Amino acid sequence: MSRGKYFGRIFFVFTMFALLLTGCEEPMSNVLDPQGGAGKEQLALINLSVYIMVFVCVVVFAIYFYVLIRFKQKPGDNTIPEQVEGNMKLELLWIVIPIILLVILAVPTLQTTFSLAEKAPKEQRDDVVKVKVTAHQFWWEFEYPEYGFKTAQELHIPTGKKVFLELQSDDVVHSFWVPSLAGKTDLVPGRINRMKLDADKPGTYKGRCAELCGASHALMNFQVVAEKPSDFDKWVEKRKKPSSEPQTVAQKEGKKVFSQNCMSCHAIDGTNLKVKGDKAPNLTGFGERKKVAGLMENNEENLDQWLKDPQSLKPGTYMPGFSHLSKKDMSSLQEYLRSLE
Ligand SMILES: [Cu+2]
Image (tube, rainbow, N blue to C red; front, side, top):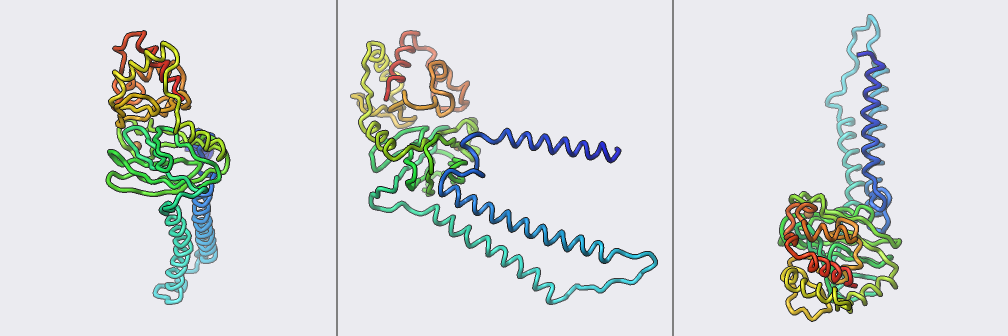
């Protein structure tokens, strides 16, 4: 192969990689553009390790090329250059320098790791929000112990406040990851892990499961909705006193269909429905959620498809399909779900 062709091929491969990487970047989902304090602290660690690596590479390659040129064998010269094996000074130098570099890396890494996994303060504080996160195959449950309610698939947080998360799993190992806000933390059955995060600006940030956990691992997405503290407080009030009672005839019918088909797994707060399922996402305020099943835009078509054939959208989900419902029951059920605020 000619040299030109060879470099042409390498150039092609790298261009393809670059294109692939640009495809990875989604808005509001970028580790290198953190939108909160925790993400910034973690980016500082990434940067520190990159600077150290670049420094090591530059020094090693500079010495390498110097030696390559300086000690190149000259024509007719068969003498062996001075040998340095067993040289105490040199040996010490290349043991001590890496140790110093590792210490420079280790101290801030350990500090940040422990500080971001801190326990939440016991007392209730104005600048702190506590959330218990439970991962299930394949959905996320968010409980606000201080406010006394649970929600699913959408984690609401106030901007500028510290959010202390307690993470646990209901089944297998999952990993909680919101690229724009903070690095991953595993959720391990039988264990509680902790992490802190915060958002500077209001926005909807993408979250996902980052540990292979089953057939729909790649579909186990969630949203982090960061709001101004005043908007967050309004949301909390609404969740505490949700409007879950049906108004129209169709909605009333829908509530009946819900109580006969969905209630053993799903709960809706603020109704007179006695049994409160907690095997599946709490649906209080479902009409205001951005996504159906944490996955698709919350519109009529997607909700219809999800209720009729969830397996086709999230393989392995425990949600059964309800395609056997009559057309009328299905449409009133959907009307009721969409009315929940
Ligand atoms: Cu998972």
